[in-house]
Image 1 (cartoon, rainbow, N blue to C red):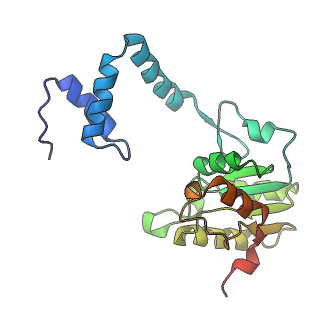
Image 2: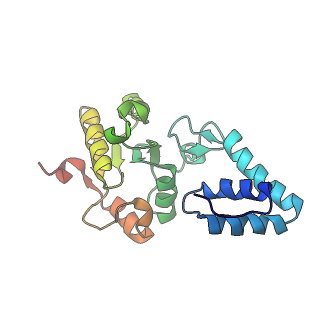
Length: 208
């Protein structure tokens, strides 16, 4: 129930939009809107245009599904990267976090989610088929599964392991002996970097 009284419907509409963002309550939304109201028109116009351009013009890499300004992203296009190792992650944010460690020089594959039957997300709803197609080409020697250690993440890792088991590749996972928290983004960069460098065979991580 909205008990706030606004002097302007325009102000209220703007607050409502900001309040839809994750982690933004109505107090913070109002503060942000009032801040924008004090800015020059050109500043606010630039802010709004950046968001519109982001949504309208952003692309997803044809190879790894990371966000990109071009058809193939800068990481996939970088000839200095190790091209036969692919790190599989859940989100674009995970790519950014791993890149910040400076410890990984291979390529990526962004699934765009994890298998979660409770949420109606099956294998066909995320970028699994495109990963298998990349493996089938035959250039990949190692897949590193770097998904968050949640039930859904583990389910997805096991599904991928079964799908990729019969290809002539090494299937690894980031070292779990190092506590990395519930999400990759919460691991400090040194720890996350170490967990990739000291990765282990996925099969040895299975508790059979």
